[in-house]
Amino acid sequence: MNLKKFGLLVVGAILALVLSACGEAEISKVDADSKGKETEKKDNEKKEKPAEQKLKIGESVNFDGLTITLNEARIEKGGEFDTPEKDKFIVVNITAENTSDEEQVVSSVMNIDLKDADGYSYNTTFLMEGIQAQFDGSIEAGGKLRGEIPFDVPDSDEYQLHFGNPFKKGKAIWVIPASELK
Image 1 (cartoon, rainbow, N blue to C red):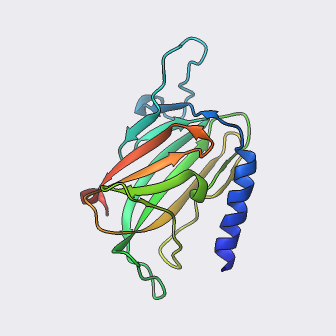
Image 2 (cartoon, rainbow, N blue to C red):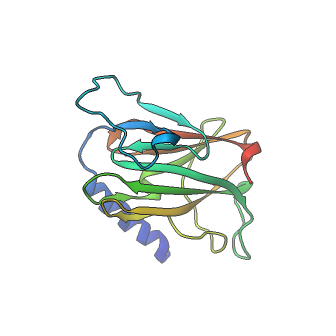
């Protein structure tokens, strides 16, 4: 087992302990007009929140005190030592902003997966070249984390990026048409 995989395994185990509280995630779409502002009205609104939010590239969602934005999705060729086992590498660029009063942890292994049009799910992979920074770590209250996640996937007409908490119900889903991959 290489060092990167071991490190992700350790981060995943720590995240599992931190996120062990079960329940339903609070998910709400962030409007362009109110981006960066707290948009939740917990006490005044007693509306049923949807279990899923379907979004487009560039849109944001408030997910349990994190504003998550899918900034970009692109095809990456890889490098000299990076050859896709399937058809291609897709890299997603994501920003998480902590709008809560407490430190939060995100993990590309625990929180994110990519599905193709047939519903097959793909976990993150490793690339030696073409990635700026991983989307893993702690985010202090009011802080931001931006990173990229590579996936080794087959050709598909559409992909869906899923962000969720494995210990809670609900997730945010970004629809990525293959025609929009750069």
